[in-house]
Image 1: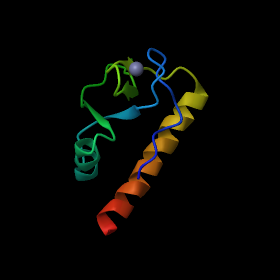
Image 2: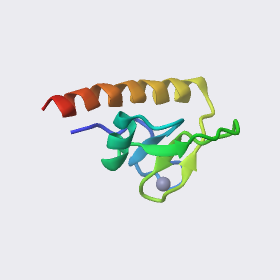
Image 3: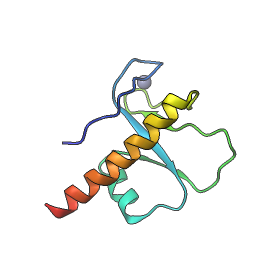
Length: 89
Ligand SMILES: [Zn+2]
């Protein structure tokens, strides 16, 4: 069971948040996307992208603080580790 990140939606207060990842998707990213664990944001970056998506209300959230940024990268690492565990089962 994969934990959701420790962040709540500021619009609907849901805890069903997933990270949005940019760039050409790797096979890991595609697989995690198929499990609804991350959102693919595409390859075009304009510098003002949101980094979280709420599965409950579908709104996206931008990162505003360093703490939120650390949480984002920490959660990506966690997903990467979880992916390895899933495929080794
Ligand atoms: Zn929401």
